[in-house]
Length: 630
Image (cartoon, rainbow, N blue to C red; front, side, top):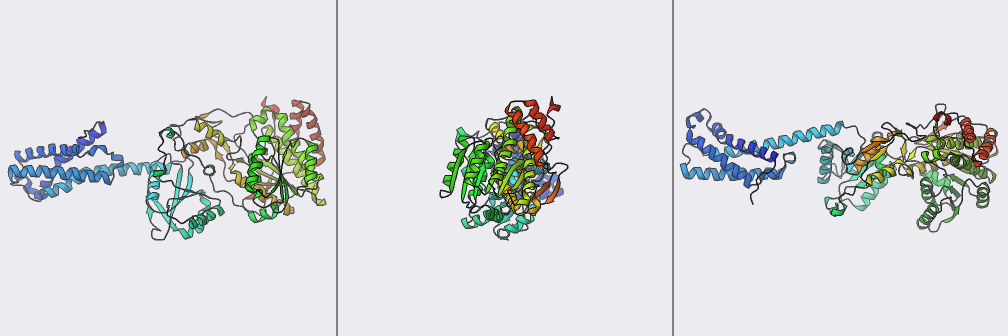
């Protein structure tokens, strides 16, 4: 069936091609004859030219030249043009030969016209594509949205396709830094402007050299690599805090029509904006191996990750404590499957129960206590401030006192960046927990008692109540994604990073006498704009922000800060002698003063006296101004 172009652009292309065909015949004669061209130019040549135009028009339509799109002109389009031009010239000169024996027409004219018409038809198409590709790649290079910096392994066809498509897509979620090939045959060359920077054996060297540009992921584009080679690459990547993924084949894409609206899964580490911190695991193993350990809040995001990582270092016994039955059950079952031989105990209870905490710690006699139990959701604690005080502040005091009485070797208090210049109850109560542990740590130092290590970090990607699961849930429903303020920023880290920080700081704090009364802080890089994070999540799902999924600004929530901080203005940074770690040195509060005021807060909070409780909270944490909000 003959295809006739139906769309306006196809008809414009048909008019263009017919015009090129019309000028090709006389132009070919002119190129062959030069000044003698005027001697043969007559009405017969004009009629013949008109006949060629009609012949060419018919050949173009018959050859289905107008099913292609100029924007994606390719070798297939060139082959179609070749067939159409060859057909048109063969038919035209065959008819002309029968009618005129080609009298006055040079025998080389058909060949000249063939090359000329090929150039007139193919040239504009490929010029148009080149202009569009260059324009789009220029736009992509100028776009400032957050993209994941990646390194490709393999300089083959799959890599070329991926690079080309990323260059075309202005909403691309990836920034391709370079390509590593299996050998050095292509090193020093480029694929669409992306350099082939090294061979596979130099991967470790490349990752060290590119450590300062925020490289986050390695993508395998070559599926022929041996399993042993891939495992070696994965080990090297993990040493640099970089994740590794494999590019899917086109044949692996889903064809189920019912699932065509499903978004692509999002790798949490792609949202980090930097490589993950790599810490000293040898020191962590030395701290944990063969020890009895208690983890409070074991069913929470950080608590669960603590259980996973600590269990891998062969402790003698782990006690899991949480007041949420199902969360405790989940991590207990996971641990039983992860390390069947490991001695463990699951305890259902609250850190607010002084007698129970004293009983548990005195009976089990843990050598290390990781205190992760807390109320962490800012709006929820803001709506229930008395619960925040009793859990975050008094609960931490109860655990710390019980550790002191039982002569626990090390207690680790897990804190948050919201404790710095707090504008909400959650931050203020966590700051008081920091203060109490600092004071106990200084007081205990002379008597070789419990070491209190406080660790402070920012938001954990994917944790319960954090913004990422909210975005993912909203994205699954088709949006919109909700952001409280266009300029709001946060520090982010993965839960694996957070827990490695806790363990690294615990190891360092238990040995470093200079860390007394100080707070360990992770260098988490630059803060991330939540609006940019929302856009990146949309792009990583394969959709376009503002087109496929919108982002709504809903206003700051109660107690929410526009920008979080890791250090108070009065806190001095002290080197922690560990990569990725700092020590903050805030002023240490008087222990007796804190205990006296905590007793008042316990009494008022348990009596439900909100105003008295908040007043004492504000007195103890001057940066917190609860009554200024009213």
